[in-house]
Length: 251
Figure 1 (cartoon, rainbow, N blue to C red):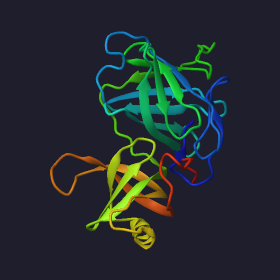
Figure 2 (tube, rainbow, N blue to C red; figure 1 turned 180 degrees about the horizontal axis):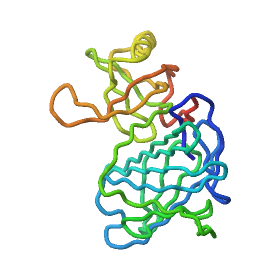
Figure 3 (tube, rainbow, N blue to C red; figure 1 turned 60 degrees about the vertical axis):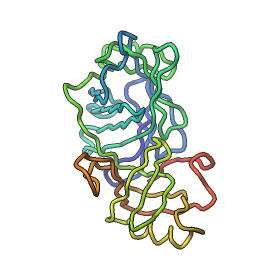
Figure 4 (tube, helix red, strand yellow; figure 1 turned 45 degrees about the vertical axis):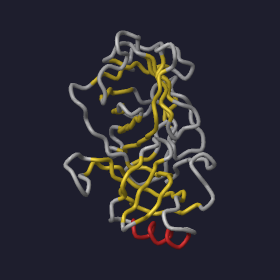
């Protein structure tokens, strides 16, 4: 259920073990991936947090799996396939916990969310698509890292964009995060298309492009902020919004 990769080539449908299908966002459909966590104390513990594990792979030595959870309800997810040129795939979106406090849902670019429960605040265990334990001696646990480890997702993004006073702002559809757009890469093509299409100053228009999210210093202040870098502009979609348009991220 991971999306875009950092290397060349089209996305493919992969499996992590005999029972969990992981479908990339580059495909139109996706299977649910379920993780487990027991509800002790603060459930997820302190956030932001990084959970990592080496997950079984049907036709490679393993998948290095990293999940970053943020306290604003956003997640970044990355998988690197060993002995495949370190091909890395990413997903981003929002997470939520159900009223029982037992299930964590990761809603990203797939048609169905990744579901999790809590083994403890330090361990997530991958379950099958039905939320059942996997009958296997192989490892399906993701364990909390000793410190937060940043991910810079690279994927196709859609979101509401506007350009005003020599600066672009982009509200990504799946996370809801509003981020500045770096004046580099294919940003000039995005700006030109926006200025040609907008009907009034400051109008927000749905934009699609390949890009990455990096932590960078703002124009003022010292705190690093998530910043969008446009690598390949796709399109401006007038009349569309995050709610009205589907958001498959195809590369």
